[in-house]
Image (cartoon, rainbow, N blue to C red; front, top):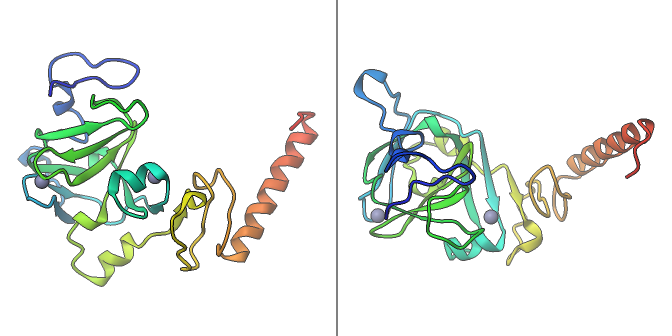
Length: 207
Ligand SMILES: [Zn+2]
Ligand SMILES: [Zn+2]
């Protein structure tokens, strides 16, 4: 597949995407500090991570994640594009853009192994969402770093997960907290919203 287009502006040069993060190979004198290793099911795609703790770890219940992963929800850990270094198979990937239902490399898109089709990541415009199920988390400390911190698109769920974590109806921090979210968090969130409403009112803006 000859896909070198990023959404909006097209990238110049054939296979230009291979030169930039997250697909850029860190060369040996860059000292890529390997904290974790991961691989797809068939082992053709392998990568390393240099960041110990993901920026966030979320469970997404949206219907796109449900169908794309053939699972009730998706578990994703967020990283910077520079945190990953592919050691194998990263030029044998396939893309899927769920917004346009196209297989061109347009961001944001789903990235899979072109051989076994394991989901490798969701590539966003600035960040990547990796799937901890592929990452070798060898000890309890590593598992604790990756522990999910919230549920999002819980309004679209196919099953209840009564684990006491915050549960957002849609996008985290931009929708409503529901169900078994910790009550203190719900109160705090409502207080913040009320404050913002007041601020807008004082500025003379209508809702
Ligand atoms: Zn594979
Ligand atoms: Zn989702």
